[in-house]
Length: 456
Image 1: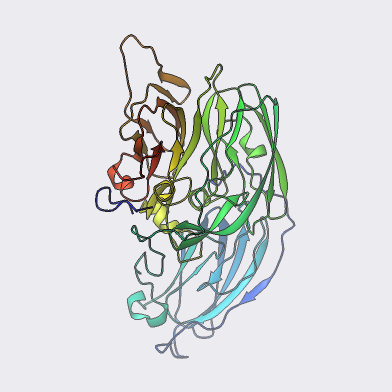
Image 2 (image 1 turned 180 degrees about the vertical axis):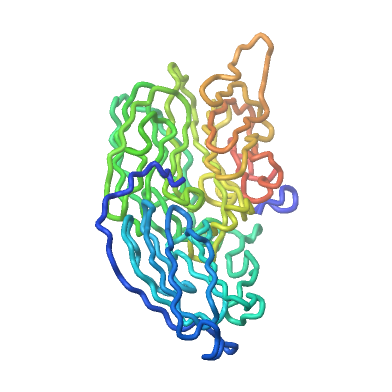
């Protein structure tokens, strides 16, 4: 399968979580002296002195965010975790035991001879703001040698996508086909949080946080009035949760984060039709969503017509971290993604097109689960005669105005569907018509009949 080249250039914590009740714990953590070749001599102002600070950790902050010490002084920190999650405060990122919610500990550092930093080492928490600057009176960070805070290339060490690369012969695209809703009134669903290394573009792997091992997670489907009873089990290494946009529930109860090894049952009645996003709400939510924890729920409108082919496309973005590691939170916060994709993989339906038959009536459900990017869904060479967006039909066949639609526009976590009939054999390209995104992974092919899969 040729890759589209020059033509398309394709290449809060849900913070309502209840803070558990824990007995305060007392511990003492010591760190070695901080100082390099320019370490301050024993006659320094702080020599022989211990300076004490009270530090509060929360979701997701360190308070205060900076302290100032005398050169050569030791530092004693009384640290309390007032958040709903485990946190650490590690000098220069060195190993430090987790501090449980509600617990307190004592840390002893130093002597401190040069400016440095400490941060929470839980994945994503440093980039989200859990950083403590340690300043030294009279010593500028730029002059402090190894302890200086320097600006690094934000992409240094991160994986990169080759838009002209092809997947291996063993690679298989995600099947976008969705089955019609069944007649069950109660849908029992088991979702397991799993941290899994997966390929997201040819030759590019990331450690994703997933529901049932895939990003997006399974597409669920039912009808208005059905009940979804979802058992969520956290098989990961950090707190996770789930938020169904199709539900009306108390967020602090059913959307609360659960710890590794815990489970909860999230039950809701689907009273409204549409395609709705679900996602993890644990802090930082942008990191959990951006690293794979999202999916879609389809709730059929009443009297939904049968079609010949029905598929679901969930848009998301890639914010690549180092090869095989978690995605980059700093890039998510800046909105600088490496690609925009359908169903989790860069240009996957270019490499393996979706097949339809000439004469087929086709419905495409579209959910924009991206954290930052909008979606302008368009199919080249076809016109939509039916459009549903966010709870209502915008267009139906048989209109006396003979209306047709070219694009379904969706902001983040909006959804809908389009329908059309494929009249002729050929290859039809579907895209996010926001051109920068079309050119970076947000495209695929529909092949009708025996037509060759060539780019438009």
